[in-house]
Amino acid sequence: MDKILSRDGTSIAYRRRGEGPPVILVGGALSTAATEAPLARLLAPRLGVITYDRRGRGSSGDSGPYRVEREIEDLAALVAAAGGRASLFGTGAGGALALEAQAAGLPVDLLAVYEPPYTPGASGERFKACCTARLHRLLTAGDRAGAVELFLSVTGVPADMIARMRRAPLWRDLVSMAHTLAYDDALLGNGAIPAERFASVTARTLVVCGGSSPTRARLAARALADALPRARHRTLTGQTRELAPQAIAPVLAEFFARDMYAHQAS
Figure 1 (cartoon, rainbow, N blue to C red):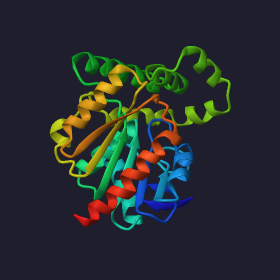
Figure 2 (tube, rainbow, N blue to C red; figure 1 turned 135 degrees about the vertical axis):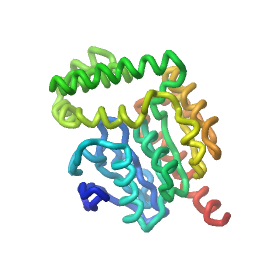
Figure 3 (spheres, one colour; figure 1 turned 60 degrees about the horizontal axis):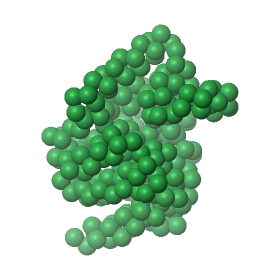
Figure 4 (cartoon, rainbow, N blue to C red; figure 1 turned 90 degrees about the vertical axis):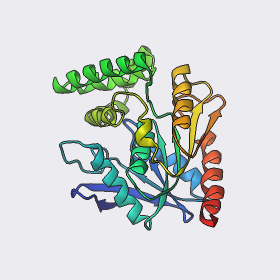
């Protein structure tokens, strides 16, 4: 992997595949560039795909205390490395980061997100506050495994599957990134969609959700699309929070490759 320095001196590891219009894949909670590699390989024949380890993960560095602005600066460094402009695809909390980056003025041509985990509404905000408090208690106590379990359970992973994951080699990697769950939590604020801030998202945006995802996730995706000035919504039949690369790749290839040329023509 190549490395660049973010504005605060943090080293960010990344990899580029393909030679088309540049698209940066922004991973969600507990993901790395390796997590995004299967999708990147599917997109590489038509796009110049950049995957990276978000700060605190994989081969990237970390500098505290955490601020959302630092992750936006990481993306800015990647956009500069891509030639000064790029498009973004973010999954989960990575979608929230992509939106925040564009709202802050990052030069993004096109933007696509898959189920940023906002929890709008009074009950959703109470749920988010409860999860935030539990997460910080666990991390403060040094219970990194407990923090990972909390995240997995909140996102719908059954208890028996979590038990099997604890016995798998992957578990050590997840626990090593447990502190970054607080970063993703900070990205989501109080869980509400920040409609006023996102009014400045000028990029044409595709908001995608899974047809088999929980109702709250599908409703949140529609509400997000309604809050963005230039967004359209799409549902992928049969998909859940665990998005299959084969399902989303043709959607993204069409959106980024075809719409990029329309963007340049306009």
